[in-house]
Image 1 (cartoon, rainbow, N blue to C red):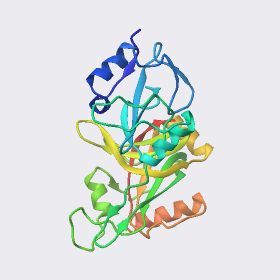
Image 2: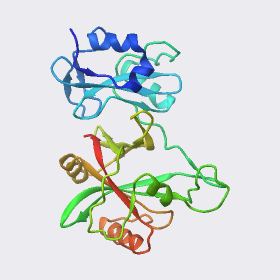
Image 3: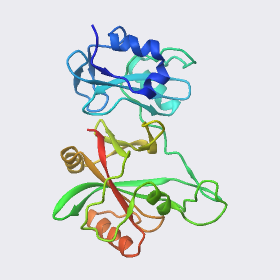
Image 4: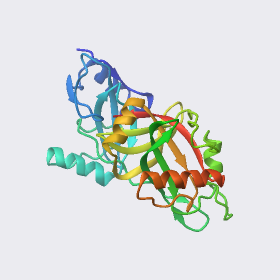
Length: 278
């Protein structure tokens, strides 16, 4: 029986037209499944269902999700994490992925790969993300606060300048001058929440697709209050500051003070983006 499946162009390119058509016809797709995002049951015969392909260096695992939770997409993960996820479910190693081969049988998702280091002029920097609730116009909003552990150079640059904020501004983020003003939306970006944890921040890719701008080394746990607010608003605020501007703050009130200080110093940009997943 045909399934109510969404197969994105990126997923189709990975698995091939023949396999994609078999899925749509119902030959290789399960009727019922556990959503890879919210972990509740789904039925591809009764509701729109997304195909989500987790891809490692040599292995691929196809999973399914409610289309209302997450769009059909390709999610890069580390080979070790992907094989570990398959072993935990099947007790066996995943089959190697070769050109033209079919993906491995459906399984719950693996944790995304470690964050890719961002090159600077003389060393590597990584992004740190803190999840917290930010009060804007007397309403609490779920927010991500991003700060690298070192200066971020423009790709190909040999200089020592920190271009972290200018690069984000070029992608649509705006300088923050007032923390009581909601950041404007940024096109093509989203925050990926799966199984109640933050997995990635996605940015626009090629041909309308998305790719990971940041991926968690281990899925990042969020508070019940943050998750509830995010699921209610379906929108997440993202604030970003250069290295050393925010620091590690143990409480949300101290985080707010640090954000206000960074804004006053002209060292804070922000944008709002939709929440993908639950």
